[in-house]
Image (cartoon, rainbow, N blue to C red):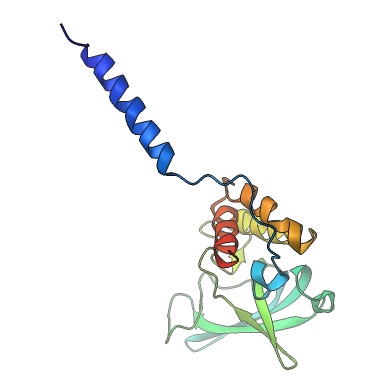
Length: 189
């Protein structure tokens, strides 16, 4: 009499598991390549609050004052930038949709860049949805804030020592942090 069905299944799972482990690359450390500040995020990361919001026709605008800088020049603190987009769900040619409408006092996280003397909001990161809006149910504000704090934490580490910290962040339960850490490590191989 041969092995039981249960025993055959366990042998199959054990064999499959060993085969899979043999094909997986599980790095524990990485070469000490320098990971520069702009490798972490090409733009400044800021938290601010909506100072004013208005709607004219199908368009909307809001002024956001920077209250905290996670990444970027400290001189950004206290500066404002303006967002223009489509009002309440009416998208026009890729303009950001301000739905629900931005409210004065609403806290948000953005990435920004400086064009000359003008601050511009940018949203070119594939692993984090911006702006993150505190108190808006569909916005992942807490998770995006964890990501921004992770960037801030890694910035405090010397460029040669950042890879190991990013490796550990790659297993974070927060999707934004894990995806970002893997993205940085992939780009800086």
